[in-house]
Length: 582
Image 1 (tube, rainbow, N blue to C red):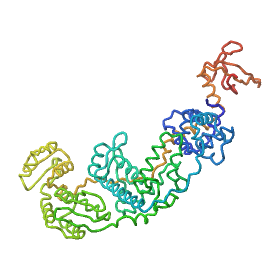
Image 2 (image 1 turned 30 degrees about the vertical axis):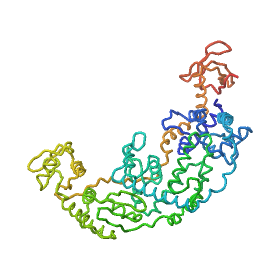
Image 3 (image 1 turned 45 degrees about the vertical axis):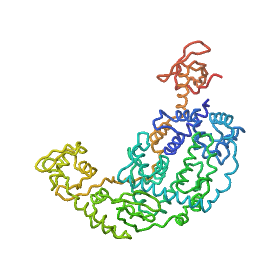
């Protein structure tokens, strides 16, 4: 049960806080920005409510639970070392003692879960160092994860992943990523997206995962640089119970006991460890490779130790007569990204395979490549020259490119499709896969009400040699690639609660004693309680009345006088105190 003196003391303290500090406290205590609080007394009542206190205790680390438990058992103040954090959560009085509602909740929890309030010893020795075999396996996992995340970021430039209303990636996109061997399963996808979001490579924009400017720049870094950025962000995003203020984090084997009242904590710890293992920061047994040691102590990861176990990046490939390219090692980032604009990667490992096709080369030409630029790039990259079948395919694709031209008719505003090959236009006109375009034949061309870009991509997707042209008839390359977004620094989530905090702060600028008195009277009337009301009479003396509170309005309190058995109406301005009937 809430103690009214606690409620009043807490309300006074709350309304004295700066708005941003109050907003942060409300956020930590799980208060909604739409909470129906009118003043600091409402907030104090809400924060001292049993359910709210229980939620606060659930989120506390073991050390703070122990400090609270000791104080409650000894009816004493909390240990000074633990006071600031608990005071910031509005769990302690000014003298360091738990509020009555908090003490009651702690006593109940300590009876139900005594182990949560007991020390578990020290955090133990530092994690074991990974041996050579474990380090090699961790490096391999790190390399695979860096490549998979790079694939996700790269693919999202052209086709952002879509999400459901609940925030999960849609089943269609999950299936596509698994079938193309970007990820092995949904857990890997979720882990990589979480790591990418922590590093601000990807951000949620509406119902899509979009690439940021930082993500686009990250793609151009070396494997070690990519790994370092994500590893550091993973460490910085660890929850407070396992992370020290200096950036260090506890040995992973100690994480499980750090939030003993939280039923979701075991699953949280399992997810954190799984992502650390996936990124090569931990081994499955909890050992730490050399490159994680400094990161665990709060410093930068030792990427050089990891790089020593990664295969060297290369800048050359073998082009083969079967229209494939073999990279005998990981290609440097820039070369890999450009090669994938003209060839489809079929496998990703230390040796990767890419395949050229008419479709992949057509996409490259549509994006601005020419036969000459393709040849120059491949000749520079290839250790075996350009095989004749590939050279022939490049020439064939370049020759056919632009046979179909899509533009906008200036006079009618309709989309216009032209070609020097009338038979090809006839084929397009009867192509059932393009029925939605609503093509109409007129004057040796096709027209459509569908916008130019949509018509262009419809023709491109059905393998027609199409180009887009501008109003002057010049070729205008179109790109499916979405523009990258600028990921602002993460905003303080407490700002969403600032309007509420400012309103509460303003409500405390008046007469706190009068506000508290009015609140007590309102509660008495609401409960039809019998209270003792102290009234100052005109002659300056005071008199007490024992009333069954019945109504409050117009500046007057109505109630039945228990002693005289009559109805009394007392001016609120004359009431100087109210207390429950003993």
